[in-house]
View 1 (cartoon, rainbow, N blue to C red):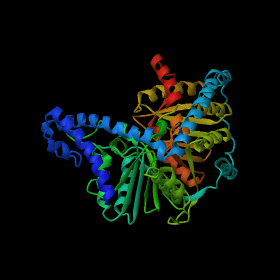
View 2: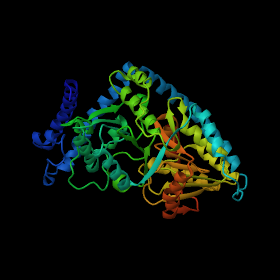
View 3: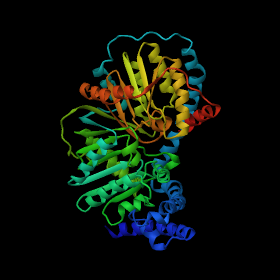
View 4: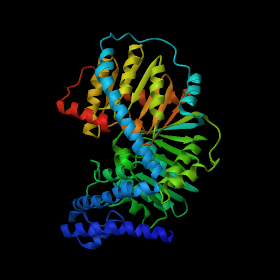
Length: 505
């Protein structure tokens, strides 16, 4: 590591040591145990109450880490990332004001008007013209699509086994960009693979500061008893390794919800999974292994995000954006398009809404968080055209507020003839298939994903790929799920939470 890297790591470690020393005094733990807890996880014996003490340490550390992060995001960030800050606050303000007006109109007039009309039988027409749709997407996004191949990796074992194999066999570079790099036992295992590989490979890791800070304080229910988590994953990843880590700031509370891992600039993994135990063992989710020219675009996005997160911020990002794309990936494949949510540019939102409006046969959606009224309205309109509309939601999500919002959405869907399924447990899948056009990636069907945070979906009309998605995810999940046929009970608290989710999340 360079001298500057050593100094930066020393600073981060000093903060963690200070926190641990203070909390160690409060819990009567020896200082050497507290200091070592920054590194590996097995220093404190279970019989000493280490796990409980560790939680106390983490809460205390979160206060200092949170203060440091917010100081970076607000007083400091506007200095080296002025363009990003102006765009973030401008976009968030515009989306919030116009979105509120739109939601009021939809909720009080448009949906009510639709519900007064009878629900027709299903139509039996031809699907939308995919060739014309792809041409229109060029116009909607302002650029041509790319090419490549997609292999679906369903659930944690399939994905992480493949991803860690790619990491272990990397030859030159590994770039991890994720919303959350947790500090549970499985995340530490992934970190150890990266640290070991960093001896011979250039490894960069980015994660969202606010998302990661919140995740580090919540342990999955299946966490092994007595496990002692690192206080800081940034410090843990950099300690005794050549891994480079950058924590992404949150100007005006916006976030980077992207989840990509790119190996040797040739193989990319993208989808809904963060790095943590629940994604490996507990939740239902999907990732994609991607090859071909589309990887070059994803790599360029990663390079820009890495540059922007560094000392020179927006200036470095501008220079990176002007660099010529390296032709490292294979050039074969079928049409694949990257869609984004960025400041003032909600491509994913616009593309999905327009596809719903054009649908002639079916619309299948599976998502954890469904709170966007405009999407719900267009789905209701599609069902009134005779389209087969089906939505899969988790039976029990990971956020009570979103569960409440989903419950309100379920009743609205049922009133409009939309078939709703509740997947047993937690489904974190983020996918839609509309008349044979698929959109899969990191974006939820809520305000943050569709209009505020940074997101990436991949879209394709390639028949074999879409059919595989239908078979392995949608049809399989409908079989596993319970179809909702009667309205669910909605409490006053749930209605109030639904309003908050609509406006804020």
